[in-house]
Length: 285
Image 1 (cartoon, rainbow, N blue to C red):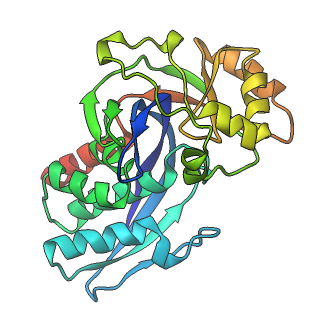
Image 2: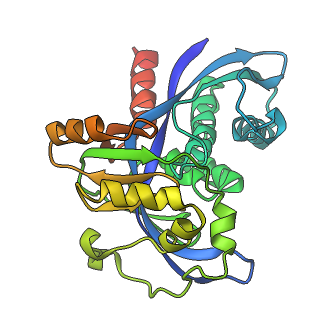
């Protein structure tokens, strides 16, 4: 069994919606950055061709699980015969805007490409990932990026790294509900990457999510007493940047007892890529 393949969380540093496309999707601009909080995925490679999930995910059937879909899509692409038993150890909350499902799918594509000995180029994995979800390619590539289109057009971008505090309100925010809301801002002017300023940026989904899910607004307001607080994606998670870990501990001790929050570090290089680098070195050695 191959254990401990990380599927990291991401945050959206900002999110602007620049229009609605004819196919119903939205053009947007955002910055994806990783944090060092990860699900862990284990793989048992099989010769009988069976692909299965060996872990329960609340409210997600095996047939709808992106990890299973990713493995089957990869095998179909190469017309292979191998299988895998996939075990997901969840740490990233579902429905929190941290990309857990997309990250899991990307880790399956990257890991099985390695474990099945396929040696597909990253571009192939990115294309397969896009068929599973707009956020999957960023996790396959594993480097922070400026994103446009529906999130699939990625350009290198390295934001500052450092401590972050994340709060997960007690609600799940369906992405589609937010994007379908008639009051959502959809006409923000696009900006150039070199014009970006974190201080003047915003999340166009925030007002809608605040209205529909007041607990998200409560978390933003509470965390905002310490540092400027932001919402990731369509929510529900909110976060703020800090300059030192000591300040993070003050926030953690003050967190209301019925809230979930954690300290983490922002990273521009995914733990998944670090794992691949390590495994490749071991294999060559």
